[in-house]
Image (cartoon, rainbow, N blue to C red; front, side, top):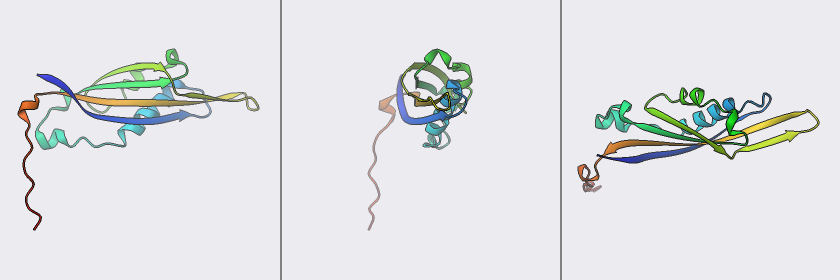
Length: 126
């Protein structure tokens, strides 16, 4: 069976006072998750455990993100978290702090065969 991406959601998150890259990453993942509802599992009888979830986090300090904590944010599927250079740090010299902005891309994959799917005609709206 071929694994196919069924969804891609994007999100942003921040930590304005603690400079915590993991917290900002978790908030970005939650933002992305709140943009979607995966009803196909219940509708089509798929087991959510079959879903592989690819999470890519962009922050200015990738080595400061705890990927296990970010993976725990996902309510279903088998998460794979990768952290890359991205996001944004906003320095406030007057306060001596850094505001951390993280971006997240969350992609869900399921093992499905395209030949198992077909388009059907919609009923007439008359």
